[in-house]
Amino acid sequence: MKSLSVVVIGATSGIAQPVARAYASRGATLFLLARNAEALSTTASDLLARGASRVETMVADVQDSARHDEIVHAAKGTCGTIDVVLIAHGILRNQQEIDHDVDEMLRLFEVNATSVLSLAQRFGLAMESQGAGTIAVITSVAGERGRRSLYTYGASKAAVSHFLAGMRGRYKPLGINVLDIRPGPVDTPMLAGRPQPLIATADAVARDIVKAIDRGTWLLYTPWYWRFVMAIVRLIPERIMMRLKY
Ligand SMILES: NC(=O)c1ccc[n+]([C@@H]2O[C@H](COP(=O)([O-])OP(=O)(O)OC[C@H]3O[C@@H](n4cnc5c(N)ncnc54)[C@H](OP(=O)(O)O)[C@@H]3O)[C@@H](O)[C@H]2O)c1
Image (tube, rainbow, N blue to C red):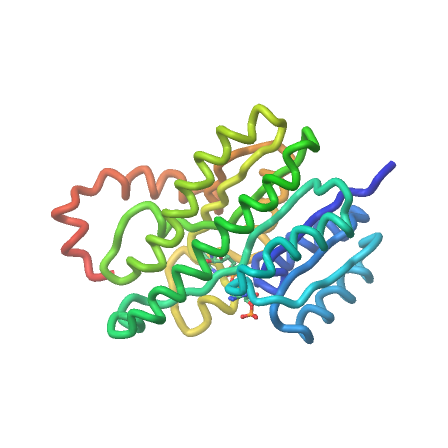
């Protein structure tokens, strides 16, 4: 029987790594993309030691959209049929860090949104004749309401969630699930030095992600309580939202 084939974009991410480890322990074939060659090679060795049947790597910056077709082609070359694509890369900046640097603001949007749309669409096209598979993308609960402290990051995640909702309609009849993963704060390098309430471990979030992919879920709040927190946050009137400082 063919082993599961999993593509991870942003494979050195704190959340992506335990997801990849879970698939490695199932004997999966993995195609990993990241921009830090050294960290990527360490991750690849670790996954092989944990039982992956094959691990191939590619070093690329996702901002280089001219390489996106090459990325999909290389992933297909390794995996043949792609069972799961996890798009996990991203950057976080508080709005005040980039408020006076509009170029950096747009760069954040390019990394978190434009590159994700491009890769999700290209992988979708490459997978459409398969009749099965999952395109899983990590967005955020931060994408649900515009907030003074985080509105470029939030907008980048909202754009991706909106895009995924449409993609889901296109790909569902083709047997491909499009999963929108919306974590709350997770203890990874992204939040280093940014204390947060209700912070989850990357291992717990990764377990939820793998379970959601296995079950064919299309929207995951992780940990689970964020579904209820966000149901309340969505009801907050805009005139109150705009006064909140965080
Ligand atoms: N941590 C949280 O609280 C949280 C909450 C909700 C959603 N998320 C989302 O979850 C995803 C994973 O985040 P994380 O917490 O695991 O963060 P992380 O540990 O900081 O990982 C982010 C990853 O993105 C990669 N990356 C950034 N810019 C890139 C680029 N231009 N090209 C290629 N790779 C790039 C980084 O690679 P380098 O090491 O080379 O920089 C790193 O591997 C992100 O989309 C994030 O927005 C995180």
